[in-house]
Length: 454
Image (cartoon, rainbow, N blue to C red; front, side, top):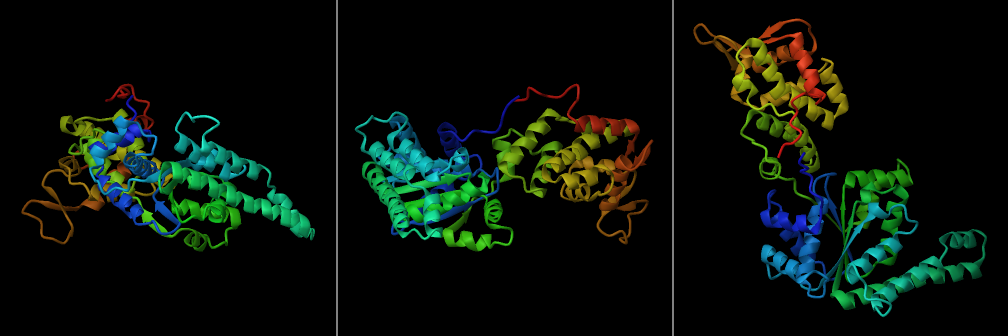
């Protein structure tokens, strides 16, 4: 089975930058230029996007471009040339050092500063540091030593117990943290560029206490005019994280507005282009049209699109409607090409909506989806001289009958989910065999499932 979910490696990031299957290269270029205008202060930028919207790829592509144009970065010569040729803009900043920090990977640590310094050290030294003489390593060790020797709980106890002499000593240690971090940043920028861009990813997935600790450590210890922080986050989830730490009545929006200087949103992808170029889906087929309609209706992210299409390719129907001849075959084909894709989409979108649809309580999802599709196979809904009209009061053609599409779709829905035995609707006869086929297909436990699709 082919896995269409790409991992955000440097190789994949570069390949997507070259091929640009979802038309995001222009936004990567635009955001890179925006960063180049943030050079007079310490900035914090929120790059907002839903989970699965491609935020990690987006920031890794920007980081890769900045590294390629920075002659002091550790990027290999071949990759540097390839990225520069692909990006093709000589105005790109050429002296920005970069750090990528996956906050979720470290949220079991006590102090975020240590893992953040580790990420910066790894970025500055590459995979194989030069050894004890490396000044960057020495600066990092100084940060670690100072932090390990500072006990924030003791500062609190000294304050609570009115012990000014102990309080002064502990505060001096906290100031030492600032000094050591400043020295580390000085060394990193001196060796690797003249400005530092720190990309912080997956913060909204972290435990609330770690996420807040990271934000506040950055606020207190990394206030340096040579640094820009870019947080790729789902701001809605991050607000819940803040409330999870400070309480449900806490003003999480106000808290984040005070922390972030700018808010940007990762552009949504062109779903049709993404499905055609990246998922090899024939968007002109009936099933393809149905998939596109469902993805748009439920506003699926790229990750959700990938999951959805993987399932759909397993149960792919082919030309079932085109080959159907009998009324029962037409009913089975209609279920396979219209109802099954919707059920699978509903499972991923909203389980309550799926449940109500599945037990015959709410036909709305099928009504809405078929209203947006004009596939020839919808003719199975009609029989004889029937035609769809928006207003039933319109005068029918001689010998013809007008049908409201919504009413007919509800008839089909009831025939499938609310009745037993044979029910005729349009050119189709829905039987218990049709319903059995529906449940079998929905479970994906089908004998001819295409588990080796390309």
